[in-house]
Image (tube, rainbow, N blue to C red; front, side, top):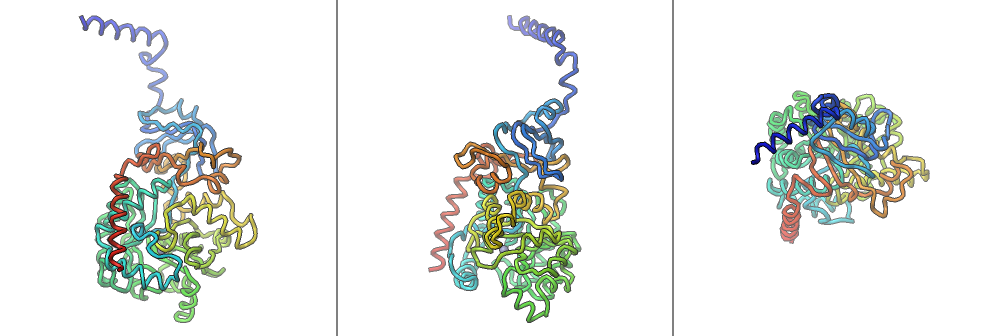
Length: 472
Ligand SMILES: [Zn+2]
């Protein structure tokens, strides 16, 4: 009995399709190109060269890359995709880029605050790290960091810590993109007795991750005040042998600058240039104490800098000359720094807000740094600072499909007049609903898909108790 009915239905469908000019005639649907994912209906903040903002826009994704960005009607007419993200009434933004972190320090969050940097380091952080930082600690700390970053819309981050290979594995498992480097420092650390040992470890790390789509392995000499001239030169040579980025703290404090001037007769920036370290592969965190000559040099060497407003405020390091750095043509991104004693979270939405407001208040000029500037620093300028602007930082065909969808239904999100101002001064990390990295959803409607959230939080509490006990 079943068979005739089935054949009859197929016949009827074919006839109907033929009459309606549908699939059987092959015109409309087969003309559509097949994509893998379409996000459609929202306001698309592209951050492209023209800074286009597309109302009722859409993005089509194929594999890990964007193939088209435009009006929803145009994209829908041209592409079809099995996976869809409905973004009506929402914002679609490039994934945020956190240019400076020490991810596993999430497990030391709030260990001790409101003390001087020296007291914080010698009495609390160094002892806590010596007693607690193991590979397992680093894995759980990175998972916690990844969870927090994904929830806040960060898709790429630059990191320097210890057991960095474990950080790379966890970053990849979480579905994130990372520029990651093992901290090279001239004293014993949890996973290394000497800078030579760290550089040998780093060489293996660079070889292992070479060519990976998500992980950019880097060399990370900590700073000029914690490493010798030889360590700095050796680090740069190793990075250049492998075409790897160099991550380093530069001109963070007044003291660093004064000591460099006394010891080397040069500013930290000029000293690094003399050693041959500066180049278009360097990502310099902070750049607070940089004068006009330093800024010219940073621009001429094509160095990327990262501004960390929360950290600079919390540690009372000073105020980076953001407007002057940008005016000099320096590639300037935005970061959080570590989550212990210097922030204490990984919230890039907050960092944009603070970056703008810190410049305004210190110059007594509300025009000093605008909302659009802050969004640029967290997206396309952040990508430029990481020298990854061909890959990420804006929503354009050919770039990696790293984007986030923000809801606009919270009380603090309505009404909306100006998109950039809303993002920077009103919206929160908690407004991020969906996060796509390399075409894969890592969070969908606020559910993180790549990490066991309950387990990560339970482990963080466990480690919190362990760290507290170890310091008693
Ligand atoms: Zn740092």
